[in-house]
Length: 148
Image 1: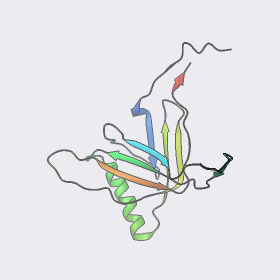
Image 2: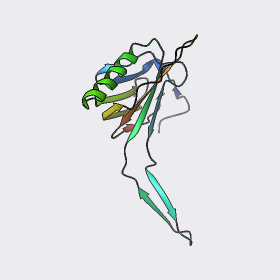
Image 3: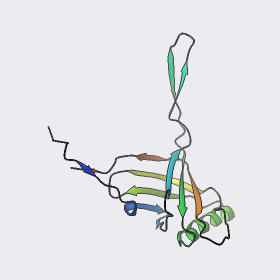
C-alpha cells in the first residue's frame, strides 16, 4: 500500500482554463472569479410518519457558471457579442468548459448561453462585470489537486 503521509497538494488559479465557444476567457477579478453550480439537488428526500425514507432522483442536469471579470477584460466583449447574437438571432448557444490544469477538476456543457448582459456601472473605481451562463446540461467532476 502506498504511503500517503508525504502527499502534498497545490492550487494555482492561473491554471484554471475557461473556454467559451472555442475562445479562452481571461481577466478574472480578484476573489471569486468562477462559480459553478447545478440548478437543483440531484436527490430529494421524503420521510413518512413512521420514519421510512424515500429518495427521488431529479433529472434536471441544468446549471450555471458565473464569471466575474475585470472591467477592462477583453473577454467582456466576447460574452457581450455572444449575448447579442443570441438575442438577435436565437442562435447564440455554445459549448463551455472549465478545467483546472493544476489538478483534474473539470466542468462542461455542450449547450450554454449568456443569461443576460452584465450590469454596467460607471464609477470612480474599477467595477467588476458578472456574467452568468445558463447550461442545459452541466456535467463535471471535482478531482482535487493532490500529487504523490
